[in-house]
Image (cartoon, rainbow, N blue to C red):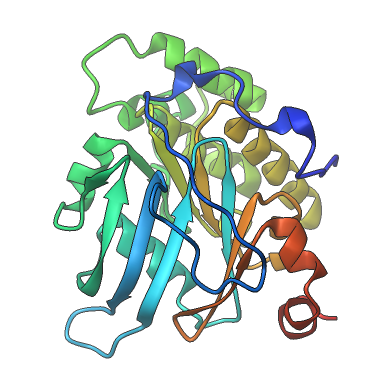
Length: 273
């Protein structure tokens, strides 16, 4: 696998698969716990909250991503990584903080309304219709659209050629890595402004993990910003433009993927030295 997260040609290429929109995030160093999100494209800003009436899991947590970027959320088990992702997607109520997309405050919108605004979300589990064919799964992803979906489907097949070969096959018969490609492809069928992935490599082999990361890089080249929760921290930071290390629901470290990989505290505490 070729994994140079900083090669000059890894950024925006073809935005036809995504809706228009953009912004600029001001980057700091790996020692910055809280990033400057004044002009971030998607941001969960100063989020505090948990599930139902339970205790807070997130504590003044801030996560952001801009077009053309891959931003990853890493940290130990129980750090609030997936909770932070779900908070941005509207799956839990925030007690404090806000969520903004392309300059618009969407804090009070339901997950369904956020999809209509341009958020594509791929959960870790139960993310495909196993009894439906690959093509039917992709068609389900375009349920909110009223235009011609065929060009987008062809773009998905270009990104994931194996799906074109297996388009008539039930998705439940595919391998774990292929199922993840179906899940990502279905999210792309909405023509999202931003793509959110919760543990996309969970439970797959190292070889399949490398392939999935390659495909994620290819998606980012279309101009879609990607926000990703990932347990394989080192590998994720290698492809990341921006990284957030969470500990107990709080921002512990923030920086570029390169900065975090080079940070002694991050390496010692989260990357195995």
